[in-house]
Image 1 (tube, rainbow, N blue to C red):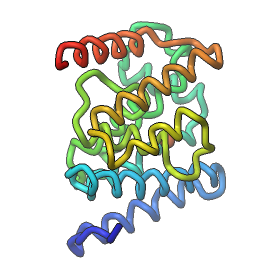
Image 2 (image 1 turned 45 degrees about the vertical axis):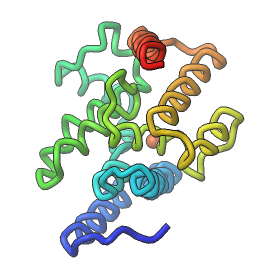
Image 3 (image 1 turned 60 degrees about the vertical axis):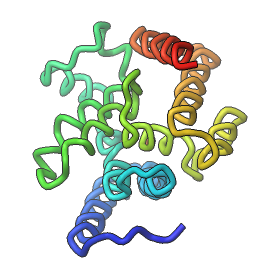
Amino acid sequence: MAEPAYTPAQRAEIEKLEHDVTERMRDVKPRRLAHSLSVAKTAEAMALEYGVDPYLARTAGILHDWDKVVPDDELEARAMSLGIDFGVDLSLVRPLLHGVVAARELPELYPELPGDVFLAIARHTTGAADMTPLQEVVFVADGIEPLRKSSPGIERVREMVGKAPLDDVYYESFCGGLSYVIDTRRYLYPGTLDIYNKLVLRRAQSR
Ligand SMILES: [Fe+2]
């Protein structure tokens, strides 16, 4: 897939973000850095495939795990002080916090980026029942980027990209994530189940 025709300003912004995320993660989380850059490229390619703005997908991908370097305790404290409410004790949903917290903190660092980028970052951990195409692209790219270890569920999603409608790819990816939580006997955030039920009903209605 050819590189999108970015403006010089967009190209410069991408380079700045890649530089910043590299500085932030290189020494402490090198694999997370590789993952972030890989999600960005995967999201960009998917955006081109599905008529989504590739610049927004690329920039959201670069930044989506920005707060993965923050220790769990501190992340929880930040979420608390930002008034982030999951309706359950925040210690139960620690794996979900980095997206929403980053989405609240990044606009100050990068006011030049459109709000859609931060919304996509906020939703990349939880998903939602009313995802925009950009949000779906970032969510799916996070789950299937080529550095992520293969599993039957991930392969199913990879196979669908470019062949199935984006909503279907997202649905498969979301359900795969939900199955993984259950298979590994982790705490299932009730909000995830709620989203799942909404998606199921919506899809039943649209048939
Ligand atoms: Fe990620």
